[in-house]
Image 1: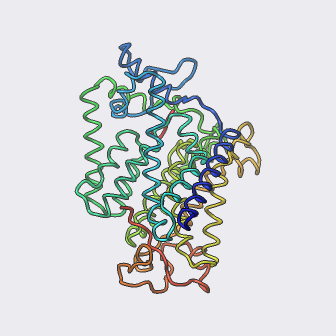
Image 2 (image 1 turned 30 degrees about the vertical axis):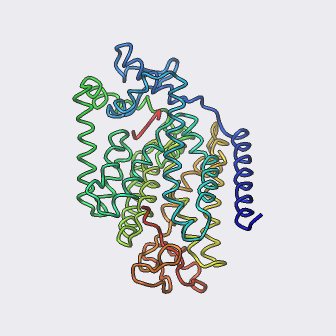
Image 3 (image 1 turned 135 degrees about the vertical axis):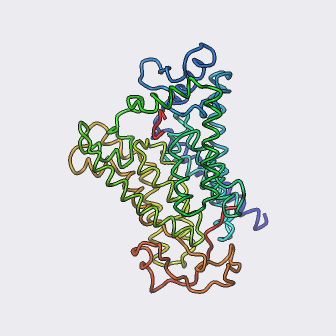
Length: 441
């Protein structure tokens, strides 16, 4: 057997072993939700299309949950009303898997090329790890649309904007019209002074919303005047799955959560995000800006169910990217890999559910909000690598023509930037330019 064939055999065996281990882990630890949210969408759409009812009047039998997305989302999902239930499940799962694979490929492939890893092997390993990730498991098990929205925004920011496309902002606008929370990426475009892209995103969102309004005036009127403001359809803010700053505050006092404290925390998070995002984009690190915005969206949204935390995936992958770009054996590399490993381990563990019934006391405060602490750590500590501190992919020349010593970024937190000043070597990698409030969702 040739050396190359032997290497391929070992990689295939490793992927098969990892996939089997993940399958066993999921079988033992994953919660089963029976595509609950998809059943809500499916029931509401069929009630609307076949029974002549109003989509926002539908509630899943024996629950308080109904369709909570804007009317444009109903238009996009309307074909589901004409599918059988098994077909709807198959389409939901297949769509999530395909867009997840594509998005992860965009993020992982440049790292694999730079490091000389076998590209299919790197993708296969990350996809296996993603399958164990609790937010990803929850997205698939609930039949959620999170990865579709993440794909739309990622396609826009990671594929179009760096090239100055006239269509930059289109994906952000469509995602915002489907669900309101991705609208923070329009703010991101404004904060980073991409006026044309922000305009395109805003016009796209408005046009999609107006189109739905013209086609379905009654449903649009109901959503914007009543359904959007009906918080009973969301669920309890203090419920353990709400891993946002609002959830933290609500669990401090479930009966009378402090709106003032929540707003103060939100403003602080937004201030940190705006500063770090501007610096990232000024440095040419669009991927970091994209990841930071996904993280802050999870923090400031009034409701961030666990499955919404798939928006942390880009930040976790970029942590590994940053670690592999650091000198081998350096404290920086070890610290970033440890950060990524601990964050990932916590986010596959379902640890917050330990406090589902009782989140009182110091242990309840710390334990019931673990995923929020991870999000805050990512917001504060995700490194930004300036263009001048990078060399090209796979060791090629960077924009400045060389790979001199990597100066710490002005955007890097002091703890990250100063971690290994003594042993920081030449920069070896380039951060790749990757070629409702709520929900029953």
